[in-house]
Length: 199
Image 1 (cartoon, rainbow, N blue to C red):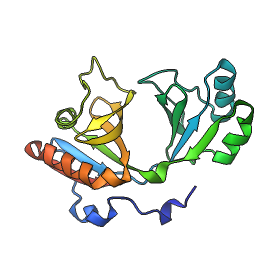
Image 2 (spheres, one colour):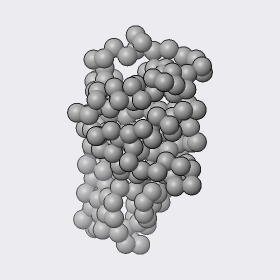
Image 3 (cartoon, rainbow, N blue to C red):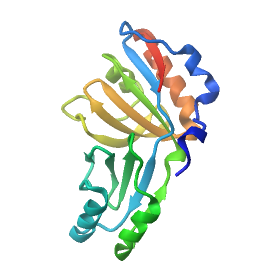
């Protein structure tokens, strides 16, 4: 995995650090996150496969959408019937070589895909309202709950949307859509007041 200090984020050229501000008076807070650590894991589901993954990762993999599971070191997103994202936090993810070797009996594939994505966090009392302006799914708490992840569209960008808590959402989008998506979020939040933070 690339050295995080040598990675250039897809929004770095916007100089958002110079516009960063703190304070709770605004209805929505947009945070540019570092380039995410993501390993895409593919494999045919079986109890044996799930057990082997659990032994390697120390966490069970979710069975269906919008499921996620997590440990202290990582979050696992269900992204399809034979596809999962392993999202790293402060701790480093296992290496793809280690995953491939330990899951070789299942013909599993593991590929680092984090550098292809941008990650943005939207939080604040109006975060749901901002996302609802451009999102194609029902974000009401009865339909989309804390700990859920879905693949959907926001404006015209394909994203993975993860709800961390009642007012905090994390968006993963292709790097090529990052500037467009950021602009849409700023515009959608303008009526509520927007503060910008850089991680």
